[in-house]
Image (cartoon, rainbow over all chains, first blue to last red; front, side, top):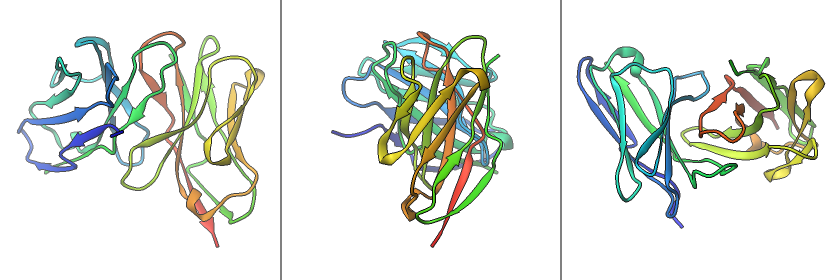
Amino acid sequence: DAGVTQSPTHLIKTRGQQVTLRCSPISGHKSVSWYQQVLGQGPQFIFQYYEKEERGRGNFPDRFSARQFPNYSSELNVNALLLGDSALYLCASSLGQVNSPLHFGNGTRLTVT
Amino acid sequence: AQSVTQPDIHITVSEGASLELRCNYSYGATPYLFWYVQSPGQGLQLLLKYFSGDTLVQGIKGFEAEFKRSQSSFNLRKPSVHWSDAAEYFCAVARPNRDDKIIFGKGTRLHILP
């Protein structure tokens, strides 16, 4: 079975631009979470979506938004990019039930210049 | 607020030697506890988790971890490391029975000497 897939794998954007990152969960998983991992740090929680509804939100500005589609895939959007948004963006999927383990994709490396 | 401290940024051990990676957490009750491993250019792979019950948890790749409530610790151990264990290791906590928000530590980079 395919794992969590993310696209694109790498992306270079300019300050002020907007970016959309995509994630396809493992088949049967209804929950998708997004994490930001800045170089040298652990991942930080951005959002969780379950059954197309936002279930959790981390401490990120409103420039960050996400949505989940009927097929449970998800997009993360970041507007008005800043240099500090340069990071590895990780998507994780789960069944969304208590104790369900998270399965992470390999991430999208975003560089803002 | 929950937090996770991994006091060692880098650790170097010889192949075949034993390993212990330290992790301390701050949480008002017993949290869910995890160890993840990340190889260069890869996502995170779950090594093991603790939710309740036996405080010694066995994971994949020969790793184990012990939950010590009195010390707020969840240290990761392996009796004999292999060169393929070189990676970054993250300890993490989550609130029981809640959302998929996991709080990660800053990680420990493990280097293996031949």
